[in-house]
Image (tube, rainbow, N blue to C red; front, top):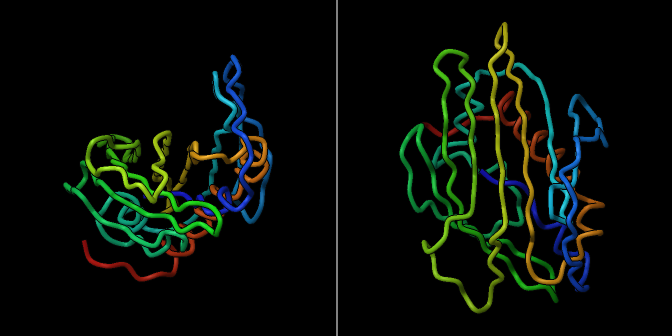
Length: 210
């Protein structure tokens, strides 16, 4: 369960800007297209903007959830991911991934190890998928930059008449020498593309059995 990072790595090698003592800001609507709303904000003590995207569409909630918290159905993810390994999986509890991102020369490829924890509210039917970096699971490799600061949360809320509301929040420090001001200029692309891909696959795509 992952967002696109490729666009952040093609922007060049500039110096990292030190974090300031900023307080977390309220969400600001910065983009709206084809039913998808995208918000951004600066978190406390960070120069990296977080994002939040929202979309509502009609699709079976089980189909949507099978794309977020299982060991299959990840073909809608970022095409820059050249390698995906499932390190651990327990249905409706967690899934662990190791992934390698291909980045254009002269930038160094990235890798990341994540664990997504799944929470299900049996009364409301809301399902939350929370992804964080997983330490000491896969040794770091000399030819790759390990992404260590990363968080993503997918919230899937069932509504009436087979409609679901999906919220996607996240932030990432891509590591290396990517400048924060350039990252912040393109941060809205991740939720927009990911929510659109999720919706398209959930509405019309075929999924593997889980």
